[in-house]
Image (tube, rainbow, N blue to C red; front, top):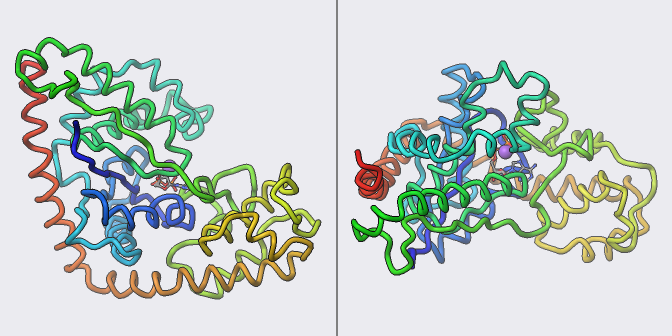
Length: 343
Ligand code: ADP
Ligand code: NA
């Protein structure tokens, strides 16, 4: 059996937003009590699209600061950045030779990000899920808390693990590295649950809230102040009808559904509970309540993030220490992979 171990990552590729917080970062915190936890700033993923070097360095510290401000304890969790543990790249190469091009071409995130321009995006963008599989399997992580958009990539991670286990079954067995089941890598489970697995853009209820959306009005940034948060929520696109009494009434109303979901997640309530309070009321009542709630949850965090960002040496120290601890887990596993492959 595999040791229960949690891995997840966030890209330092722009403004961290409410979707990253509710769908991922917030859910990392309680797992510290029950699991060994590794939380990674995935800077090598970020450069699959162009990043200004200074902006990348700043964004890397911002993600680390968000982890700490959200309640991830650098003593109980390993907080690090991907590029400091070279084994991520090494294992990703092995996986590039396990995974099939057709698997990558089927990834909807690649299709979305490449758009019509798929011949002229980086090769790294196509291979992104293979590096993600390496991130996870380098630690034999058994659980990965992510938003719903990552579901397909997690399935691919399992496909890569299964093909590796199968292709190398003989050497895994001969070297005695397959435990009681013969599997070298685990079949990692995604942890996708709760009312906030996919937060949508504030300007368009059919698009997910994302760092890469060109409009900063589409997302609530974790560093927004109270005024900016209130303004973005006030201007959020909605239909004119009042809030329904039941969740069935949210069907076909993506913007209303999204804002109710955000309220539910921020207040640790369910959507029916939120509608029991606000059903029949108009946006003039609901939006200010949502803004107050968002500010009360986010402002202590942004204050803490700013304090941390004023002291980059401390953040860099956390990342360096985390990198060393991550490498201590990764290196022996990578050594075994090398032996299995025949290097
Ligand atoms: P982005 O898509 O904003 O660039 P990342 O790819 O770095 O963010 O994703 C980091 C984590 O945040 C992942 O677990 C992802 O599933 C989650 N996440 C990203 N956007 C959303 C969203 N709109 N709603 C819920 N979770 C999200
Ligand atoms: Na994403």
